[in-house]
Length: 344
Image 1: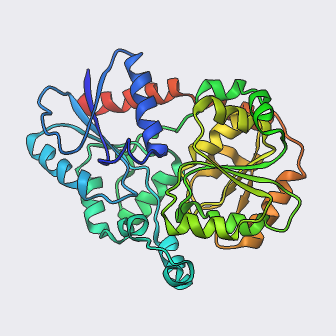
Image 2: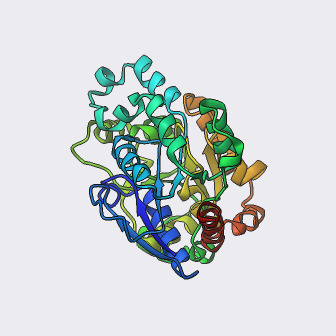
């Protein structure tokens, strides 16, 4: 079987959870004998493939929508991993907060995708021969919002790399000289709600480290730096080895985002032994159950309460054991099952 993966054009320029999902799915499908190529959307030679697999409908969908239309006319089977969550609450919060004037930032690149009409998203979901959501929660949201038939779904849970289960804190502690801190691994951007996290931790005895890419010229990053107390550090991008060591040294990992599905860094941190604090919005609860703390992203008090609850909870191996089933081997098996359903 020969499969073509396609997603947003900046997939490797702006690395996100979908980038990891695509690369790891490709790696483990190939171990099952599937040939997988990844191309940019503007590349159009698809005649040699058995099917095309698209990823991500939460972001700006014009790119994949137009390409999907062309492929549908050619009769090629289409598989779609929606990686979807309704972003209206996020958009409405920032409109009411008047963040453009208060933070002196431009949110065009972050928020413009939310204004895409859902009629186009509905057409895209209908064009796909099968949908591969990352959870029952995501599936049910799509059914409720778009009226898609339940029979069109085949769930493929997200996964965590094996090496995070064997993470060692020594390297991070040797480099930085501390452990038992709060960690947030993710891009410094409004959807990740970093400024609210900073406000929750400011003026406490807790240390927060922020790991992830950022644009130094971006107004949001500048604002977050401006309001951050001395107990907060921006450490920038970490490679996988450094990241796993940081997780192992941390007491808590938090993603107080406006939505996560469920957040790959939360899975990685849990595998390394962290207590987890996650946003209530999205599918994290399906992955972590009652073994994590959950917060309301619009409430600094809720974020703060969840952090202190997690910090005062002894780290347990139960969560680590729970998420062992979320492996890339299983992702590949579940994905290949979906492909066979389409081709057959």
